[in-house]
Image (cartoon, rainbow, N blue to C red; front, side, top):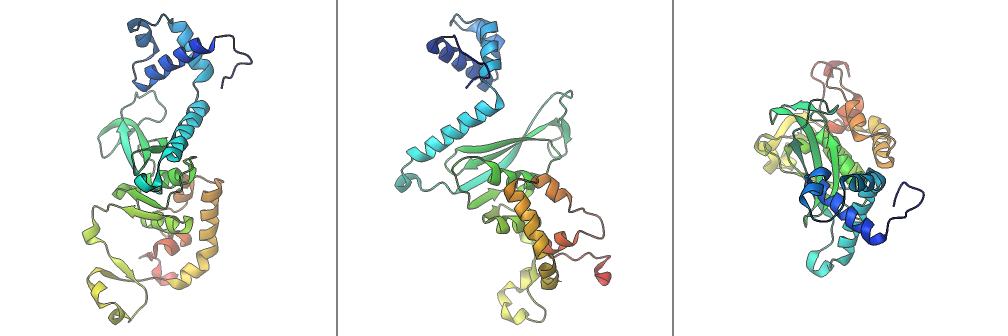
Length: 272
């Protein structure tokens, strides 16, 4: 699909030029290098014109979605299984300081941008996002599950420690998929007590239970707000990054945030 009103280039020539442009972009060689090293007879101006008219974000995304959906259609579920599990992670790429999204990455120590990938369990990439280094990986995880644009229905989402949080677990439950992170500090994790003075009902969970108890009253009070934020995510009227930013880390904490995490505010618990 082209942005031009008509096409006069023969299909065979256009196909060859498109393949050269995609090869230049996919290998990061660049159009100029492909022009001077190949023996295809195409000029740099011709390839750049094809790049300008045909290769844009909408066309590339549409082509990738069609490729992924065709891959799922061609699979035999008896051998491959149904594509319902997905894993996501980020990769930091270096970028020039003139790029508006370039930031200093605290973990990898250097300026750059972050690419967040969603990969189906049989190694098919269903979504990729360009993010700044300070962007929330939990938000990117939620956006990828909801906006991947393919025919895949994600019911299990695997992440690392940075792609999961208590709020992420809450939204995953409300959105209908299981968040299954590989927690680095799983040995120190503690569970909230469902009720007070009922520890004898679950004696084997005693070592992993904290002294905090789930505030069911607060959850009932904030349930409509939780549904509101979840609906905004599902319908796309708000991005996950914007929703998560509403839950500030200051005190007093957002009541909906407290309802989703079950964590009382230590300085305000006596006034709530």
